[in-house]
Length: 519
Image (cartoon, rainbow, N blue to C red):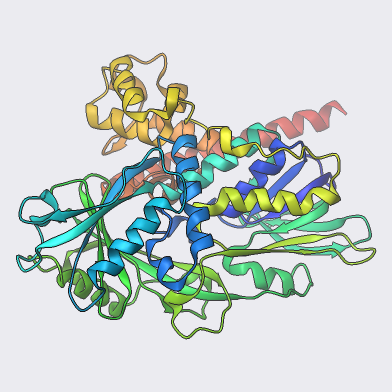
């Protein structure tokens, strides 16, 4: 990439929407540059409830169109990334006085039938006296309902979209912030600055895509100096993680007296994640954190249902994220729509900007398609045919999207790996795991063991192919091994990354000096 290079699209923001748009656009033949001021999925997109779901509770707010769209996407994504997206059954205990049983049955019927369902089983009633999901619940709870959705490794979903975008010709720059952009008649003249070195570079683009998430408004009023019709409302959602609270693979959806719902979901084999909250937020989206009140609220919510109480002292990790929701005239943050709006600003004699307001991780791929539909008149040479619904994400190219069959063959192929490690690799990388496993015949071949089952071979793959630069990138976004690694292990990993990055910079400088001396 050279300074001042012209791109069709400059995508600002490396969350799920930015990565999804970059992928779709690159696959249609556009030249794309994506810049992200931090790591990919560093903020909202790695702070979700880790679900691909239709949004059962949105039916109460009559958002049938959003739920239908999300349910349709749920089926699509299960096929595109069967390694990082997995079917998950949810259990909803019935509590008289919160929502009547007939209302829940009607809602579940709609949920089952609003969109064609081929992969996941439908809903049904269950008796907690005989169903395994009744074991950890209070004995006063006799009956409930079970329905289907899916779990996702959210940050990895972002990375896989960025990987596919790169493999289709896009340029992906992390730790690169847009600091200014001049809007001309034919193009944007943008200045990017490295958040590591402070160095700047100039790039040109025919169109800017503002996928800044919580920063979409500040980007418009700041670097892009453009007004907008839509606005966002920042709502904080927090989650807590405890040691595993129950011994089965179902998740729970609990109804609260305030009409909100809270999930309790099996997480990373040995843990349970509980969330989420909905709290108005007005601070810096990069500095969001859970409050004591939110932790207490989540514990109290599940304690209405679990026989053994959960206390704040049991929390081993937590995360918070800021949802950039569409501004609406509603008092309750939980009632704000999770749908999105795309605003294309095309002023006479000025280069266009497309801004993304709102959205949820489940509908990111459809959002990207709609973005391409809006941009089509500006890029008549762009391939018009939608393609992402049938192209597996990196690692997801499995026969019939059958992960169970893939895992069986994977464990046979790498029989020297411990079963738990093989399963983690298969889930995280799918068919791409061969890139760092082939040619090895024992765990000792994988290089330095930092802790848990994190070996040097995996780390090398992550820094070479997935833009990982720091220990945090690896143990909290590319994986969740931070739950298993102690401080010494993280220190060893950080030291290795420092040596790697220093060597990389040294090699770049050496090549640059050689090139300059030859001129």
